[in-house]
Image 1 (cartoon, protein in one colour):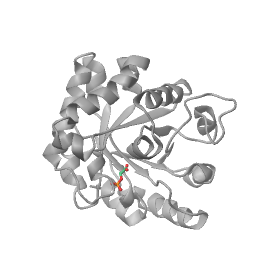
Image 2: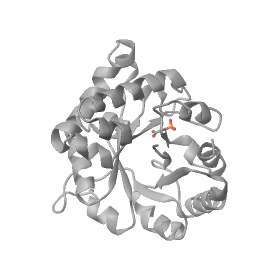
Image 3: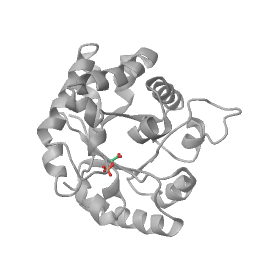
Length: 248
Ligand code: PGA
């Protein structure tokens, strides 16, 4: 049985004050969350503060990105060891905004995935197709290519200690959610592709869905066989909206 995970990706949002309110609100509501693991991914500069606020709670902590390098002259980067030291258990890698806005390539994401695991962080590997790729029937090719870059570098076994987030790019921040069946179809494809290499890893790996998840659609999505939770953007920015998903 795979545990459900709901992770909030705050992106470039928040201030000290708003984040304190948000974390307190989530922590206060955790008594109503049953059988679902919960994590939040603040902007880098607030990670230490959030780690302190989360002390004594069950809420996990992640970063939104990580350097592919360990140390040295890489201005602006933050390493996996640093994230680990300040209290992270997770880091997102390959979010579509990193890929599409900042030009991150499959190989870059794979290197970040490996760097995270080397320090004992659990990478949340984000994959997903653009609207034109879906419309031209390329969804499976795209997610397979994105997954293969990681498998080639780290081996399929590495996926057992990771989380995969399928996020169709056309559904992110658009209010246009994939239907539960559309999402399930891609999740099943991802799991069967992994099963072709290692059935145990495929059975174990959590595959989250991301893209306009909210309190109204989460239960239906999470009820699908191969959907093991969600990666939440917009609806993770208030405790009420986020908790509605965590309890769904
Ligand atoms: P959204 O973002 O929930 O606002 O669509 C999801 C994500 O980008 O992870």
